[in-house]
Image 1 (cartoon, rainbow, N blue to C red):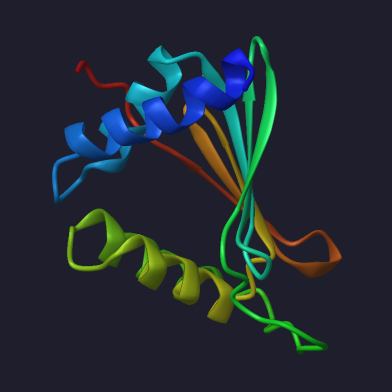
Image 2: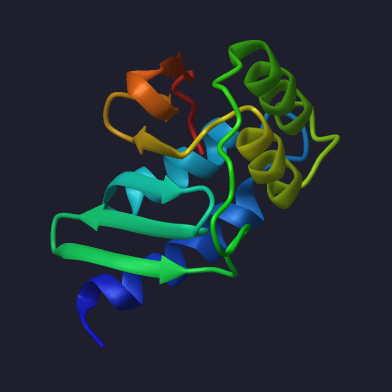
Amino acid sequence: MTTATDAVPTALALATALRPAGGGFPYFAEALRQAGITRHMYTVPAATSVYELGTGAVVDRGVPLVTGVVEVAPFDVDALMAGLRTDQSGRGSYAQFVAASWAAGVLWYQVDFEARTCTYHGVSGARHDEAYPAVEL
């Protein structure tokens, strides 16, 4: 294992433990930032994460949300925001957020832990940028 492959699972476990149920994403993100993770890119249909650190990058492959040839929904910011706000309120799981994102036409998203932004991408250049607040752990 490399430093990066050791650091990411450790950071994710700590971030999960520190995250409050409601409004928890900024705390989760800050724990990852403090662990040296600078960016997280997630491909929604493939359930694949790429974490960038100063020491390298690692891929974490989950169970794909879809397989085969599947139509992509039109990018729907209102539906994305509804799924995002449900997750932020603590009334949903991460898996439910991912499913809502997919239903809203999100193909991939990127979290920049230094800029404290999330950018959601759909087809044909569609995107939505969302900032989150700085917090102290």
